[in-house]
Image 1 (cartoon, one colour):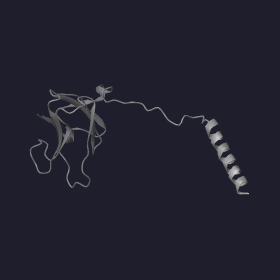
Image 2 (tube, rainbow, N blue to C red; image 1 turned 120 degrees about the vertical axis):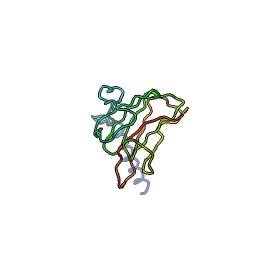
Image 3 (cartoon, helix red, strand yellow; image 1 turned 90 degrees about the vertical axis):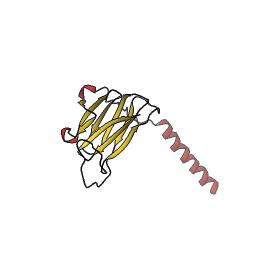
Image 4 (cartoon, rainbow, N blue to C red; image 1 turned 180 degrees about the vertical axis):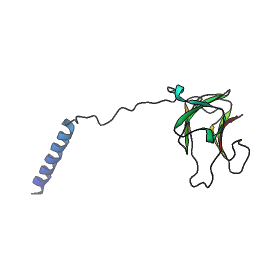
Length: 149
């Protein structure tokens, strides 16, 4: 009796597997993902200096910083920065600094982060992000991209 139940379960399982194997969905299960590049849309980037007054840039735009030692583009959404370094001198580190003052003078409230280390690849097409800590009780007035050897 048990063997008949076991055989019927095996037949049912095999028929389900056969149906799944033969059946092919009409729509593909995966979609093609388009690659986007800030470099492709370089004409849309607004040129800015390495020291940026935050009141002069608006959220939702792409900006480009061209320095003798690096070229980078970043997107500012009003809170965070997402960007790519297109070209850089491999012997210098690149830093990003959120500044309490527009002039980026030293302050205990400034936040510095290294976005590229010296002599560590990749040397181009390097993505970075600058996320602000949550629940800050003050706003930043400046932003600076700079190098240190």
